[in-house]
Amino acid sequence: MKHKSTVTFIDNMAFDVELNGHHITIDAGAGVGGENKGPSPKGLMLSALGGCTGMDVVSILRKMKVPQYELSIDVSGELTEEHPKIYHTITVEFKFVGNDLPENKIKKAVELSETRYCGVSEMLRKASEMKIRIYINGEEI
Image 1: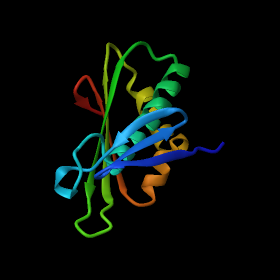
Image 2 (image 1 turned 60 degrees about the vertical axis):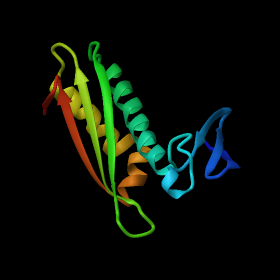
Image 3 (image 1 turned 90 degrees about the horizontal axis):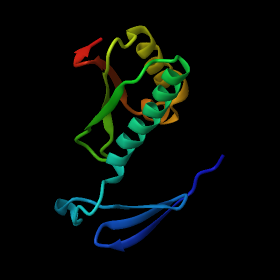
Image 4 (image 1 turned 120 degrees about the horizontal axis):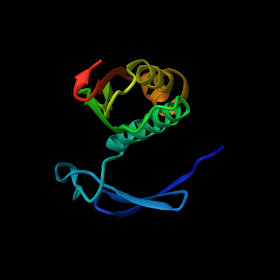
């Protein structure tokens, strides 16, 4: 499978991004000539990681017949000081809410996503230290 994105200059530091018929605007902050009209490219990498691993975890838990739950994923990155600025550390926090959630299945689903299925995670791990945290009803497991 091949993906293709077309990135077209709008003005200042803003670009229109087209990916498979979907459009988003990316931009930089005012400090570097942008107008903050959309997310930054590096920030979108964190969103891509959250989406990739989230889809994996939901799919795996569905196969494991885990009952209903809420899930949010916080992804944060710490940038190096020198150029090119890259994320030297990325933290992924899985936050589950629900009744009688099976801790062992949740841990397994996250582990499988992070080590076997999530291609975004694998790519970013080559350049960054990855920290994974899992919470069930506010308690870290």
